[in-house]
Length: 204
Image (tube, rainbow, N blue to C red):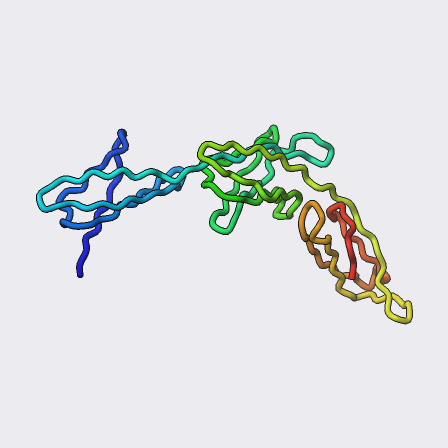
């Protein structure tokens, strides 16, 4: 068994011609270099004949919205991530908090805001069901506060060098977030965690 592979780019009218194709069955696949949407088709060509085939790119929609600060004002410059099992894309919100993902293949996605690499907002179950769908979903960043605590030994004396994880429960709006801090001896076991997401946090 042997086979031949040819490649090229379509013209302005979307067409391309492959000469001297081996007679018999063939398959054609295409990917838009801008949207990364793809498609494929099969056909066959006889000896000395010409065969025409049309490749339709996969259907897609758009996901858009705004990012808001905890106060409700627009939040610009925030990385926004759209993902599912097959795709991960990221854009940055504009000065007015707006973001948009174009050419999103049909499927169900999760949308997250991750300023400074920290998960601060999440929306799940975003469904792009039909070609041309436009799904609008806003994200509001969870607020930040400061957590103060003390670490004690079983006899209630201070534990000055303990390592303490601070975790938000998975049900919180920002998802599961965990941070680890050290309580130095000079603090007499006192722990201060700045910029902790507002949630029923747990120290353990």
